[in-house]
Image 1 (spheres, rainbow, N blue to C red):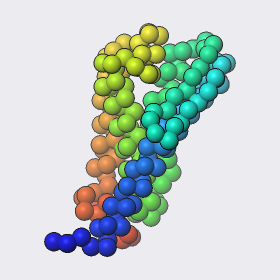
Image 2: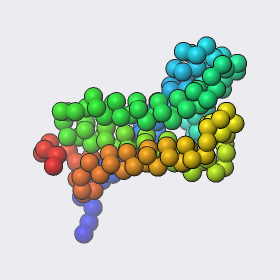
Image 3: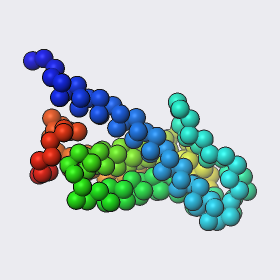
Length: 170
């Protein structure tokens, strides 16, 4: 069975959506840190969202480091799910992209805390250093990944992902 134009087009759409999902996830994650840092009066030194690599928010004086650290993954997940909620009733393709992005964001943030906790780097190190318990990071990771897989499951059969057809979702 050869590749059809439709399959190649779907793959290109998948690849583009995945790249934008990566950067969108990092923007939402860092926006969570920044929002809580600003709200709590913390000093934001810089926010980095590199072309290659991982994003980072550097914060100086911070009266609420635990809240600021939690705000990244919580903001990343909740912002993506809010975006998904805003696409209710949208065209099937828009809804698929929103489901994919939301699932991607939930899984990325969940894996970051749930698995990254064992390396104790980045937000995981900040959370643990400022009073979070390891089980809380693992629980967040499992719950967030579960939400992500539910989003992806709602997209339907893989053969229909990112298809141009406007037929109604089951």
